[in-house]
Length: 389
Ligand code: RFL
Ligand code: PHB
Image (tube, protein in one colour):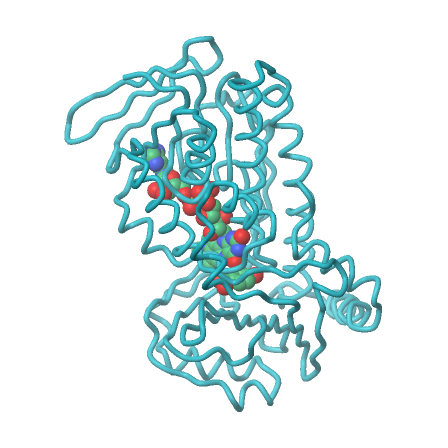
């Protein structure tokens, strides 16, 4: 088999890249380790930057997002018993859109399948060959049979645990990492959201986030010890703890109900440099991870996809290698800014078990500065709605 671009990973990065290439007449094959239902069962991101919405539009898959997405002009920040609001639209002219990663991924699968895309599920033992030469290929197995695809380029969209990043030789790779000493326990429930906008809360008992998917589907998170297991948290224990971490007006009106999904995520900042090696290009979580505070993961994956699809269009349609040659540098420049914002916002909002009294005072001063200074709010808004591509 032969194709122009082999895409490893059928998550949002791989699907969006494949769809954008298709719109520009460039053929790709997607290799996905799991089934489509498995990928759609993962409850993850919920907040989209305008840049990602624009890419979905360019890919011809934005109808449902525009009809059902909820445009948010700001967010509420709570600390201890105080609340204030950061107005995105006033500061930047842009809102963010609340639309689940599951729905976005479903829209991309529908479009790819409608166009007759080559998506191969349940692949095993994916290996990348000769990415540093002129004739790369990818081998894999399905149902015990071995296959090889020859290609011009390989896009590594296979997430943090994929094979693509590890294919880049260790003496070429530089990895930067910070692991946070706490996790997020998340609950999805068929209940109306407690407030029309997201609430990020730094309370004495730790961080909490009130988010949503639609008018009757809420997504809530609380900071928990990394050593906790989902089984340690009954629904009642979760709701009791969430209420304790919210200012009284929200705690008193919170509607609770049975959880339909409950999971614990660890928090990590991670970047690998460079993001390309020969004809292999890393995209999304394969190259970088952010802690979820600030909702930058999927959105940063989207900016990589933007740079990579533009580079491949330059190569195939304009006979220019400039985009490909500068992909890693351009992508990393934006990635590090998203890393900085996610790290700053995580540090601001969580209670670190190792926090000293001085650290706590600094956190309180920083929150007061954000609350009282319009320019600081403008900087936060600019980062939250997404820096330009
Ligand atoms: P994914 O989604 O991990 O998809 C990678 C795909 O590759 C497949 N794969 C392989 N396929 C073939 N061969 C192999 N060897 C393979 N190894 C892996 C996997 O099965 C999978 O299908 O990476 P991608 O596409 O780069 O997308 C990244 C996003 O999923 C991620 O950044 C976000 O979900 C992060 N995130 C959030 N991002 C936001 O922008 N806004 C948010 O509000 C937000 N909230 C979150 C989040 C992530 C969370 N968790 C659980 C980490 C909230 C949470 C709780
Ligand atoms: C979510 O809705 O899952 C969500 C929203 C905002 C974040 C992280 C996660 O910062």
